[in-house]
Structure formats: C-alpha cells, structure tokens
Length: 480
Ligand SMILES: Cc1ncc(COP(=O)(O)O)c(C=O)c1O
Image (cartoon, rainbow, N blue to C red):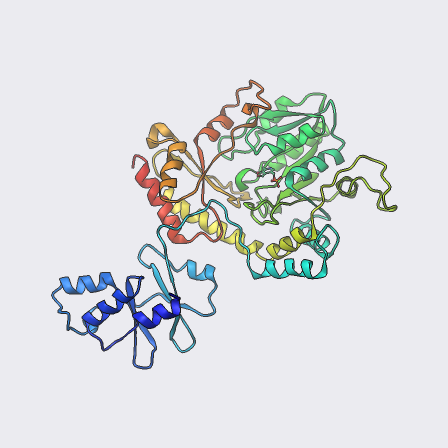
C-alpha cells in the first residue's frame, strides 16, 4: 500500500470516538491515526499507546477522542529534506507526518528500529546524478572533460594550496608524492604504525623502506620523540597521518623535517576539512594526500588528490600520473610513469560532493558532540580528543574500551552491536605487526589503541535517534 492510501485509510475526524480511532489504527500498519478537522487540516497524531492509556484511565469506547490530552505533534513540511526530517526523530517521536501548505497530511516517515545502521555511508543525491549524467550525455567518461580540472580547482581553493593533482586513490597519490620527492631504493621514510596499510605500502612501492614509529597515546598520531629517534642518514621523508580526523602535531613535525632536510607528506585520507592552528591540514607539509573512497569525508567512489604549494612537485606528480607522457608532445615518454588518473565521471561526483563538504563537516561535529554527551564518563570508555589548537573532523568516531574496567572487549562489543543491526569497525592492526611487514618491534601505544579501539557509525545522515540507540546498546553491554 502506498503512503497516500494509508493516510486515507487511517485518518479520522476530530469528532470521532475512541472506538473509531482504534478501528482506523487497525486499518493501517503504523500504529497511529492522523486526526483532521472537517476541512482535512491536520490536528494531531493519536497512537495506539495514547488510546490504551485513555482506556486504562476509564474512558469508554464511545467517548470522544478529545478526552485524550492534546500533544502538539512534531511535523515536517513539503520543503524539508530527508536529512532535516531524519533529525526530527527521537526516542519518543517515531512517526512524522509531512504537511502541505494547506496543513493537509501528504506523506509520513516512520522510524524503523530494525534499520541497519552503517559505519559510513556516502551522502549522494540528485546533484551527483546530474553531473554524472552530464559526463554520459557528453561522452566525457575518461580522464578528459571539464570536471577533473574543476575538482582540482575546488580542492586547491579549499586547502589554500596553489596546486592540486587528482589521481585514482590516496594510495596512488602517496606513491606519486613520494616519487615526486625523489624517494626511492635505499631510502627510509618514517610512518606511524597505527594507520591503514597503504601509507606504508606506498613507501614500499618506491623501493624505499617504511620505518614504523609509535603514536601518541592521546591523539593516536605519530609521536615526535619517536620520529627524532628513528632518523638515520637514509631518512628522506616523514608521512604524518591525521588519524580518524585529528590533525598530527605539524609544527613539531615540520621543525624536525627542517632540521634534517626531510620532505613531509601529509596523509589526509581521513581528515579532509580538519585544521591545525586554523590552517587546513594538507597544506602544512610539502604535499598533502586525500582519499575519496566511499567511506571518506567526501567520495568519488575511488579517488585521491595531492595538494601542494610547490610547482615542481605538482608538475612531477602530474607527469607520473599520466604515463610519464611529456605535456609538450603526445606519446612521448622520458620517464616511467603510471596510469593513476581520475576519471571525469569520478570528478563529477567530487565536484557535487564539494558543495556538501561544509554541511558534512558540521554534521560530523554534531554527531561527535552527541556521542560525547551520551558516552562521556562511562567506566572503561575513552573518547577521542580534540586538542585546543586543532579542529577534529571525527571521520569515524572511535572509542577505546578497556576490557578490565568495561567488562567487555572491543571485539565483543562489536558483536553485541551487530546483534541489533549496528555496524562498527575495529581499529587497524598496527602495520609493524602485519604479516607483510612484521618487524618484531614493540610499539605499545599503537598496539593498545588497535586492540581496544572501535569505530562507531559516523555517517552524516545518522539520525540523533540512531546515536541514542547505539549509545544505549553500549551502556547495556558494559559494566555500568
Ligand atoms: C590513513 C589512510 N591512508 C590512505 C588510505 C588509502 O586510501 P585509498 O583507498 O583512497 O587508496 C586510507 C584509506 O582508508 C587511509 O585511511
């Protein structure tokens, strides 16, 4: 049955009896009726709970529904977006009528408790569809066409960088930046062990060796003292990773880099839009590399971007990205390059996503503050930090669970959440422990954060009622 038919079936007049309202509720599947006046204007929602309470209070089936105390309904209007409507749900409000300009019910939204809650879901709508359609209509589906350049311009602008080079992923972006910086066989590059493996793999692709260091216990980002202690004559670069959206300590990193003449490549895959001392991350080192994988702050499906203020680096990245083909002469190659290009189709999505970036970042902050409100001060739960001089974008809102205090491990909490259709993710195993690297090092902070960490749902479309459900499941699962 369509929502329109349900509305017709279950609506009653304000002059009806409790029995008639019960019958109307029984005709639908939403456990409620919409009460209207004689002109069809919406007045209130009556739920089966309201009816049950009225009967228990002694009202008869033939009593008028007006004996039931009036509660102003939370309603949406035709012009409201799905996101706006989603935010109207709470643990008390599970049904939202949508009214037209004449106050008539034209649709409704129901909160389904059994809904699957994803960790990270992209926010895509007509805007992306329209720009992708343009690529299809015009035939510009590969790396030619206007959107790649447009997306690069938007990214350069938003990061206060002069140059931006789109590529096929952050992994290929990191590889290109390392090559542009001259990193190769026999060199060493310092990387935090607590990261997604591609930070290290990109170093390995060049023939250089990733040198793993531990992270800071509170920010989960690369530890300055450990960088200093790991520098050798072979060290060429440092890749700080702004893990889960919290910026790494860039002033300290740049100072060390200057002292030892090292290149700094920021891995901003998880932290688009974050700032360090009011400057965009990505613009603070020599190059910054973004990811647009489907779970990132914004997405192009797969995709990446290198930003820099160094023309030489930008030109080199561009050359290597395009098969090493000399820009002046088609099919002429003086270096071995790669096909690491972004397609016009992907860039079209990226351009549309850039117009949503501010809203996404705002909603992520909001989600983080709701999690903090519900999970703050729970025994054995450590929340992510936001140091005063940075802005954390809380890519995935990640908490640590001390099993000795909380009475449950992160792994088991993940299973409990899954039982009620809530997705969560473990923190990456430290790269120095991965079978392909397995260095035999002991990096206790990375190991502790990895074994106790759990990333909670963080999509911008997450509703406040979802966050309440996630947090109440966590509270029920720990010693509280
Ligand atoms: C810190 C970090 N670096 C690099 C990457 C790689 O990004 P991509 O999938 O775009 O290659 C990721 C992706 O998850 C990441 O989290």
